[in-house]
Amino acid sequence: MKIVSIQDVTINQHLSIIEQVSLKDVLYKWAGSTVQRLNESFPLEYKEDGFARLEVISGTEFVVPGNLICQYITLTTENQIVIGILDEDDQLKHGILSLDEILETTESV
View (cartoon, rainbow, N blue to C red):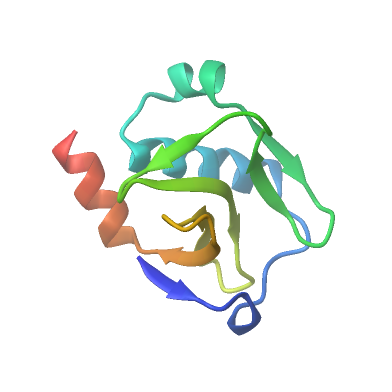
Protein backbone atom coordinates (compact mmCIF):
# COMPACT_ATOMS: atom_id res chain seq x y z
CA MET A 1 0.00 0.00 0.00
CA LYS A 2 1.33 3.39 -0.95
CA ILE A 3 1.10 5.91 1.91
CA VAL A 4 0.15 9.37 0.67
CA SER A 5 -0.55 12.78 2.10
CA ILE A 6 -4.27 13.52 2.05
CA GLN A 7 -3.40 16.84 0.39
CA ASP A 8 -2.00 14.92 -2.61
CA VAL A 9 -5.33 13.31 -3.51
CA THR A 10 -8.78 14.68 -4.24
CA ILE A 11 -11.45 12.76 -2.34
CA ASN A 12 -14.99 12.47 -3.69
CA GLN A 13 -17.62 14.59 -1.97
CA HIS A 14 -20.30 11.95 -2.60
CA LEU A 15 -20.31 8.17 -3.10
CA SER A 16 -23.12 6.48 -4.99
CA ILE A 17 -24.80 3.41 -3.53
CA ILE A 18 -22.93 1.27 -6.07
CA GLU A 19 -19.60 2.81 -5.01
CA GLN A 20 -20.43 2.25 -1.33
CA VAL A 21 -21.30 -1.42 -1.88
CA SER A 22 -18.18 -1.92 -4.02
CA LEU A 23 -15.93 -0.33 -1.39
CA LYS A 24 -17.43 -2.52 1.35
CA ASP A 25 -16.83 -5.59 -0.78
CA VAL A 26 -13.21 -4.61 -1.51
CA LEU A 27 -12.49 -3.86 2.14
CA TYR A 28 -14.02 -7.11 3.38
CA LYS A 29 -12.24 -9.22 0.76
CA TRP A 30 -8.92 -7.47 1.40
CA ALA A 31 -9.32 -8.12 5.13
CA GLY A 32 -9.99 -11.79 4.34
CA SER A 33 -13.46 -12.10 5.80
CA THR A 34 -16.93 -12.73 4.51
CA VAL A 35 -19.24 -9.82 3.90
CA GLN A 36 -22.01 -11.32 6.02
CA ARG A 37 -19.82 -11.84 9.08
CA LEU A 38 -18.30 -8.39 8.89
CA ASN A 39 -21.63 -6.66 8.31
CA GLU A 40 -22.72 -8.12 11.64
CA SER A 41 -19.48 -7.44 13.52
CA PHE A 42 -17.99 -4.38 11.88
CA PRO A 43 -20.67 -2.19 10.37
CA LEU A 44 -19.57 0.74 8.27
CA GLU A 45 -21.39 4.05 8.28
CA TYR A 46 -21.60 6.39 5.29
CA LYS A 47 -20.58 9.96 6.09
CA GLU A 48 -20.15 13.08 3.99
CA ASP A 49 -18.94 15.66 6.51
CA GLY A 50 -15.73 17.04 4.99
CA PHE A 51 -15.55 14.25 2.40
CA ALA A 52 -17.46 11.09 1.47
CA ARG A 53 -16.37 7.88 3.18
CA LEU A 54 -17.47 4.62 4.73
CA GLU A 55 -16.30 4.90 8.32
CA VAL A 56 -15.87 2.13 10.85
CA ILE A 57 -18.44 2.79 13.56
CA SER A 58 -16.96 4.16 16.77
CA GLY A 59 -16.19 1.54 19.36
CA THR A 60 -15.22 -1.15 16.85
CA GLU A 61 -11.73 -2.08 15.71
CA PHE A 62 -11.24 -3.34 12.18
CA VAL A 63 -7.74 -4.76 11.63
CA VAL A 64 -6.55 -5.04 8.03
CA PRO A 65 -3.45 -6.71 6.54
CA GLY A 66 -0.27 -5.34 8.10
CA ASN A 67 -1.95 -5.21 11.54
CA LEU A 68 -3.21 -1.70 10.81
CA ILE A 69 -6.50 -0.42 12.17
CA CYS A 70 -8.86 0.79 9.46
CA GLN A 71 -10.76 3.99 10.18
CA TYR A 72 -12.46 4.49 6.81
CA ILE A 73 -12.40 3.71 3.10
CA THR A 74 -13.19 6.10 0.26
CA LEU A 75 -12.52 6.93 -3.39
CA THR A 76 -10.58 9.71 -5.04
CA THR A 77 -11.97 11.59 -8.02
CA GLU A 78 -9.62 9.38 -10.09
CA ASN A 79 -11.27 6.22 -8.64
CA GLN A 80 -8.31 5.27 -6.47
CA ILE A 81 -9.23 3.42 -3.28
CA VAL A 82 -7.97 5.27 -0.20
CA ILE A 83 -8.09 3.89 3.30
CA GLY A 84 -7.52 5.83 6.48
CA ILE A 85 -5.53 3.68 8.89
CA LEU A 86 -3.97 4.03 12.30
CA ASP A 87 -0.36 2.94 12.45
CA GLU A 88 1.38 1.38 15.45
CA ASP A 89 1.76 4.87 16.99
CA ASP A 90 -1.98 5.62 16.55
CA GLN A 91 -1.18 8.19 13.86
CA LEU A 92 -3.72 8.50 11.02
CA LYS A 93 -2.18 7.61 7.67
CA HIS A 94 -3.75 7.46 4.23
CA GLY A 95 -2.95 4.63 1.88
CA ILE A 96 -3.85 3.98 -1.72
CA LEU A 97 -4.88 0.37 -2.08
CA SER A 98 -3.85 -1.20 -5.38
CA LEU A 99 -5.75 -3.86 -7.28
CA ASP A 100 -2.70 -6.12 -7.00
CA GLU A 101 -2.82 -5.95 -3.18
CA ILE A 102 -6.50 -6.80 -3.16
CA LEU A 103 -6.02 -9.73 -5.54
CA GLU A 104 -3.01 -11.09 -3.63
CA THR A 105 -5.01 -11.18 -0.41
CA THR A 106 -8.13 -12.71 -1.92
CA GLU A 107 -6.16 -15.40 -3.77
CA SER A 108 -4.50 -16.57 -0.54
CA VAL A 109 -7.83 -16.91 1.32
